Image 1: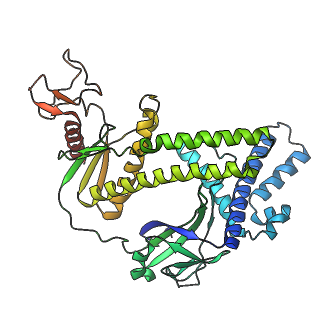
Image 2: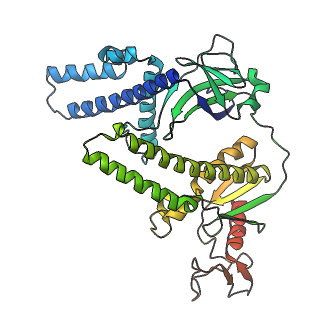
Image 3: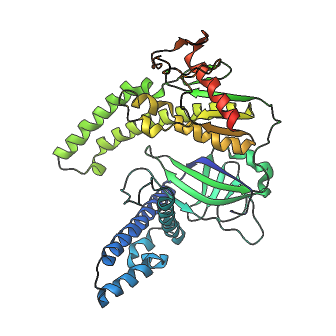
Length: 412
């Protein structure tokens, strides 16, 4: 897959049978178990290496753990219960690879943290590699492949019905190769299939360049204001269901308290599990509505402009403001910037981010910066203001968007 020029990812809804659900759940648990085994082995290795005196039992134990860590088959030998649950060796091997990738990411970024123990929860996933017969790579061949527009076949699981936007790739299916396949289950109990696709030809038709650049200012009052003066309203999806969600969560808390008083584990408390599913569905619907909105905005911006310029926002730092944290988390700025970045590469256009310093405080007409020469800085309440130097009246967000565009053009 790495030698292919273009890459794309798709996610589809899965509709497994009861037996297939049982197999998926077993493989999700096995993947989590194998990952946690790697965590436990590395913790023990770290403790053993702290011993200054390397006596024979310690040396032998270190050698044994190293061998066990790098051998997938040993996990099945040590834990024979895995053999009777329909768990594939590929699932365990991919979990081991995911653990190694987590360490590599930690060494490169240092902000993700070291790999931690994965608790058992409703959501989960496992990965499978796709294997092809020699010289026969397409969407309709391999261990994981499409059978028709509504069905796929996955190794370990067999034939399953799917729903999604995958049909648009069928016209050039012989030019597309399926890489890693991920089967996942979310908190609502729904199942999904994600595929990594690769090809030497573009996945989308690149339109002609329009030679038009735009700057966008992201804010809470309205979701987005561009340098042309267009305003996109803030939908505030979380606030629209805040009361309903709070009521459902209070009910969930009462049922958890009742189960605790009766000394019943929550996984066996049926009323608790029913209410947990209700809460999960409410949160799932809000997330879907927000993602759909962000996809529409990002696709429209990228496909209609050669260059899109935005501020490099640090949402993690901004969330420390307790007065604005909920509103900032609700708009999904970081998600939008990520979508703009990969869609710009996909469609062959450009997306750049600039330092937001003084983009709001600077007059776009004369360049005067508020807060200098005995003037006060603009506050969040100042939606309109007049430049004390040139006397031009500004709409705060529109002026900021024009300054963002100017900075982007200067750095492009």
